[in-house]
Length: 326
Ligand code: F6P
Image (cartoon, rainbow, N blue to C red; front, side, top):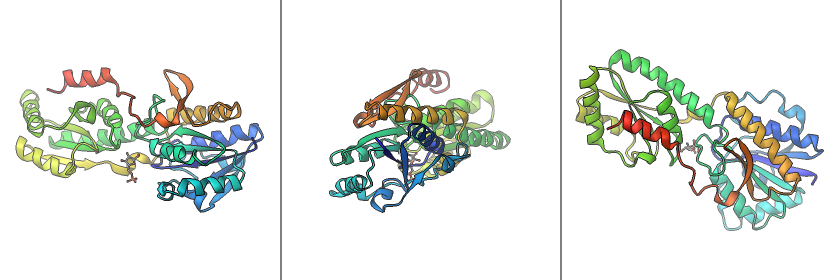
């Protein structure tokens, strides 16, 4: 093996640069050339790529976003997309392609594998943590801290005004981020898929009950983005009218994707990237994702990373429900 391609795909996540850095440094130690494609898989179709050397990855470990840029790629989903992408990779003599992204990006890898003759390997990079085969994805720890920073600030103003706040966090269809940020911010309620559908009447009753027990005070609800079809602002209005208290909505949105990665993300990214290159060289990594489970590095089939077998922390889910929720 002489030449590997790398790209970042889908929602960017803090720590992607740390992964790029470790891929380049480890590859160069093994005399492999690294070609970085820009804008996700689009960089393959558009032949937008550059060779990455150690000097290209100097002092990027602390940067959010991705120096390669990221994007979703419509072309790869067209019937002839995977074949065309594979042709470019063959022409550029890319022996292996490493994709840093989430399960959507890994589905792209699976499609490509029908035509591409090199090895394909994934690194889990998404703030959602919704990838099987790894306890944590690169970017999740930072997103939790970013949401937490916002939630702590919301608590200050909520306390001062004795208000209820409904704070929507990202997570696509899962509640990992909502649960983690909700627990760490001592939210009075967490609304996430793991607890089932929202019952607005029960929620309004709980706000009233809480205020009767503790006197008027702040009440924070952390909600995963997938939980209410009409949006957080509409739900806040419904809660205001049904509970008789003032409920404000805050949607944290894309700010959760940015920022300097926390130490845990930098370390995870470095470890998984170095391991990925070593496994590629050993010939074990084709159609696998590098992940870490219970403290052990391992390879997990790319094809099954999106099956959603990974469970949110059941201990914390139960604790929150029995201790704070009715
Ligand atoms: O997958 C990461 C993520 O930020 C999700 O949490 C969110 O649902 C989605 O991407 C938003 O995507 P976009 O940036 O395309 O709006």
